[in-house]
Length: 170
Image (cartoon, rainbow, N blue to C red):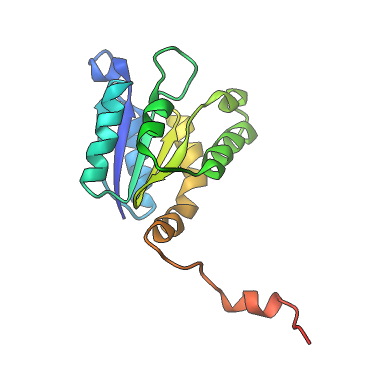
């Protein structure tokens, strides 16, 4: 799986401070089996949309953003993502928020991140903190391969043990 990390941060893009969540995200995606490019650091807003469209044109399987999912007026990553995706995958975003809250971060429920598909590319928004990225990847990593397979027309796995659990019909 080819993955791209996009960090949405006005201050990191301007050199005010170093991007910390993007490198963490790149490392976790690599640990999940992805060939990772980035992080590409861009200001929030229209540059996020442009970076997402560039990623689609480049044929990435997975694009994960970090940052821009909060409540400040400049947090526009979900809006930019919705301009690009064709189908939303609400279960991913819901699971990310729930996991953050369960990990003892009450503000996790304030994240407005979305997840969806654009063609055969999975796009997921994660929070802009290293901790939020770690919590998010704990949820995302186990389903990445299956999600990418599904987007490419793959079938659901059918383990032999599942057939044994089903009652027989007489």
